[in-house]
Amino acid sequence: MTERLSVQSIPKLKSLFRMQWEPAQDAHVLLYPEGMITLNDSASEILQLCDGKQDVLQLIAKLEAKFPAAGSLEADILEFLEEASANGWIEY
Image (cartoon, rainbow, N blue to C red; front, side, top):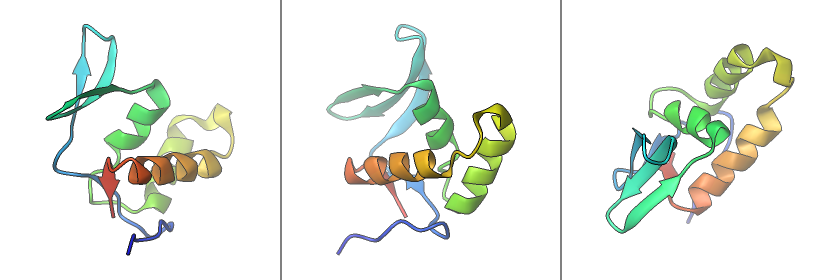
């Protein structure tokens, strides 16, 4: 049974993945044994906060404080976290 995402969920990268800046790609990437996933700026900002120490609500608050001109980011962040979970990048 897959755990459902909620604002109380505490996301973290699965141990199979490691996130780092890759100069050759000029982007953050997720490295895993079979390859590499190049992340866009939004994805990297969200995944950098998926440290297993803060819940989704705290993550949303930090990103909305960092990017206030963007307005409400909650729906976009939740959508991305659902996708990241479905892809197996994060767990709760």
